[in-house]
Length: 195
Figure 1 (cartoon, rainbow, N blue to C red):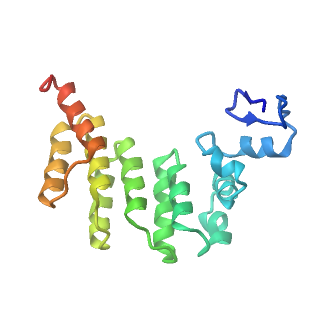
Figure 2 (figure 1 turned 180 degrees about the vertical axis):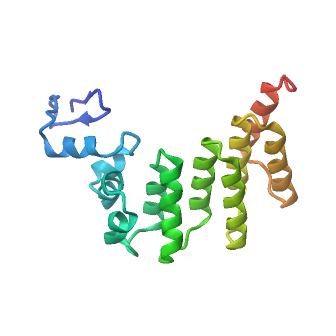
């Protein structure tokens, strides 16, 4: 079976033959409309996530963009929609829309995604605010929540704060997993405290 990886990252397979895609093909046009960070899995599966991401990229009113799918999205689809947001402001706006509508129970995975997005943008006060909101809503942080917080503060150059998150994690009786341990080792290596 022939495969060809195109400039846009689309692989075309056609019954053992490799062929070039033309931009006029409808499926290729759909791939181009979806944000470049969008997982091709969701595009190729033709899932509604593709349509939602297209709507979010073209329609500014979230009620209009997300309204048709209100109360119909799975937790996994909500996660993918949040993960695909490049701009932290848009991600936070969508997250708050899900909260405000009350038809979705946002779980620790959704909060982890938002903590990561806000941390990557170095929006530290928003990270703290989201953490407080998460606790107020009774969403229990898990190992990966602390791992993400340690990682974002570490990558943000805030070693002291990263270690505070490690302390909080340990005080809750949670142990760092392999990934978090690696992040901590790298944090010390960057400061040349660990060789």
